[in-house]
Amino acid sequence: MDAEVEPDLHDLAERLRGGSREALEEVWARWSSLVYTLALRSVGDHHDAEDVTQQVFVAAWRGRHTLRPDRGSVPGWLVGITRHKVADLHAQRSRRARDAAAATTLPGQHAPPLDERLAARLLLADALDRLGEPRASAIRLALVDELTHEEVAARLGLPLGTVKSHIRRGLAALRRHLEEVSDDDAR
Amino acid sequence: MTPAEDVHPDDDLVLVASGAAVRPEVATHVATCARCTSEVAALRPVVELVRGPAPALETPSPAVWDAVLAELDGAPVPARGSAPDAASPVEDAEPAVVRPLRPAAGGRRVSPWWLGVAAAVGLVVGGAGVAVVGRPAPEPSPSVLARASLDTLDTRQVLGNASAVRLDGHLDLDVDTPRLEAGSGYLEVWLINRDLRRMVSVGVLRPGEGTQRFAIDQTLLDQGYVIVDISREGFDDRPEHSGDSLARGTLAL
Image (tube, rainbow over all chains, first blue to last red; front, top):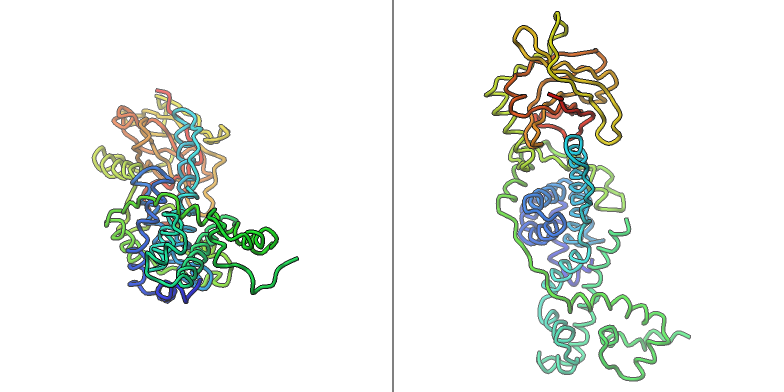
């Protein structure tokens, strides 16, 4: 993690590791929607998604010593835990369907895995929000609005070199967040 | 041929990755520089994601946070220091979570399925008066109302049988499962309703002790509690079904 870019995130991770309930509450406030949205889209049911969300945060607290602020961000770590909990739920559903099959019909449905594309989009949107200004605006203007760097500089009233630097470093930070997800996929 | 470090056009790689126009010398450099080509390839998915639609976030009910706190406060302190030096944070997180699928006691939330079970256990056991006796068999000349072969749920291997028997005006369930083992837990006998949403606990089965008899009630059968299920339960103070069904069969009435 680039502590220079996101010192507050690094600090939050350290406080959570240290056992601060306030840090957990802050983690909830900032990323419960991300976890819940991902769970909801992956399990398809509000109630199950809330169960998964609850399990993720309980697991995050109990496994807080496994959080490595130097290796990954809190949201990337939460997505990894969510992936496990969603897989657990799917396994539980399969078993339940199998149990029910003893009295009714055979199951046969396979639940979808975690929506990895959505996970990446959620993490990226979250990271983009955290980049701060004018970096986030510079990136949005350059990539979404497809302005040239010169036009972005004029729009933001910043020197061209500064804008280029913001865009380059901002993209590098976003990329790191996505690579955390990819790394997790490999396990 | 790799160009010198100081001439990598790092500020322009985003432009290349996003498909924007760049100066000819930049394009030429990237085309001949493995490092910059690799950088552009790595930036491309980031660019695509930034350009993609922002996902709509949904917010969980505040009750979920309350449930998290209740579970943490109601549960025993987790074991610390399990594999703190291992590489994967997620794999590390697992051992600390004792029962990932089943919320802990206290402020736990229950899914509809388990809610149905809890309701059935509470209401039917309390209301219809199922006595959990497990008293030893047998008494003379019971009349067998229905039988069920108890099979594994996946392979249909026969692991025992169950019978609903009437004796002196009482209804009992005889269960014989010579091949079931309790492992580190215990075996529990359930009657599951045909709707597969409600169930009642009938009693604890001692492995390897032959046919065991449990008192049940005709009302249960009349209400559709005809599926005999043997589960393996842990010693965890949880009254509900563990979900670990070892054998099951339907009483053919």
